[in-house]
Figure 1: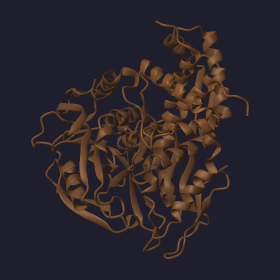
Figure 2: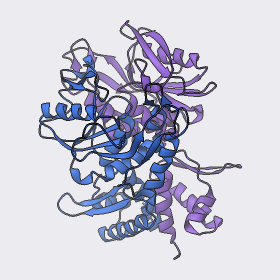
Figure 3: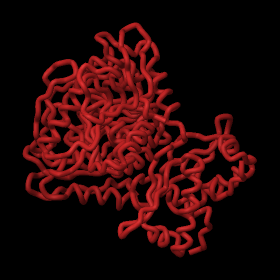
Figure 4: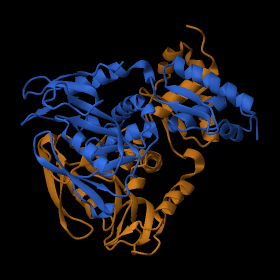
Length: 270
Length: 270
């Protein structure tokens, strides 16, 4: 095979690493791919680390030990978390989004890939040390943002359902009180999670935290620890205290039909 | 600013282009970012094109004209579409996946990010010329694969619901006959799509094509053209003919409780 130049190696390594965030690649993986010495690949990695950091295109980390290697995490992407979230707030303030009954039309933004990818990267960035085994969400609107979070963390997504589905096999069902005070059901397949695992709860919106408390209760049934809770949007002053440690990308202070939405990025967004 | 070397430029360009598949970046975008002449960026693009092609890491295409530039498409990734889909078939053949009543437990694979990302890239690769304005799916299990398809095509995802939701605003509802012969409802917010658009339908599984025909009927209500239909898994010999041009990643020839699943990659998967 023809010798592969450094700039070719760097382009291919960047593509491979950024396509599989949080996956550890051994240096040998790249030695084999490029038929190159380990010292050369080490130099490549050092260049890549500096370059990605300099241009705010995420972090490349070297992991030592037996299972060591190099992994990419989309942290600090584009140095633009706050303007990015502010641009979503801006779109939420568009007229006609507040529906009769004090509901908010938000589905379009929650299923636009580049927006949910940014949301997922930001949420994941807060939980790399939480050692979550999976991301848990409740169907339906939060699925895209939760999936992108799971992708950035390289863990599976688990979707709780509103009712038992025959194609999910035997399931555990619980009842919970929704943010609007109604009694709702939540169902999760017995095979979806394993005892002793850790769950990161991600959902689109919380009013009173009822669904999140439902998901936490569901995890208790499976003997699963809740490693974190993060919403795309939540009320700035909820009536009930949220689960401890709950985060949110955006905070909503008021929701009145006919008035512009009062929404802002959470303080932790830099 | 310190001069940026070619290998640094190539790494950053690769990250930016592959993070936003199918988005056209002007050469000026990179000239500004790197404070570099257009001729230099053109050379960078040519190197990147050759390199990604040589390592089967997707296609970099130059687009001419007023809105011209360069775009990345994850086509032909890793030269491994068939082994990748075969590995999913292998997992579908695991014991205990066939549930009572002839249902298949498939939810775990359908919400594993690296699997649905590969599925989405493969599906998108078939429809870059179909000029879809959005990807349409029906809640819930198909959402992750449909989202990844939408991301690769850089179009929004639109999710049809099983019932009208207050937070979706006014909606169009239709009734349809499911693959199992039951009458079901499908609902879509009026604001989700615009007249004259083109829809790519993506869903997880079809037995008799009932849900797909429902989605096509729903699109007719909105005066939207169906630009394509693709499933993750479908019956090899369905009782009813599928919608014209329907594709599938995998074909299921039989589903009998207690017997290993007879499933294989579709013929078009290379």
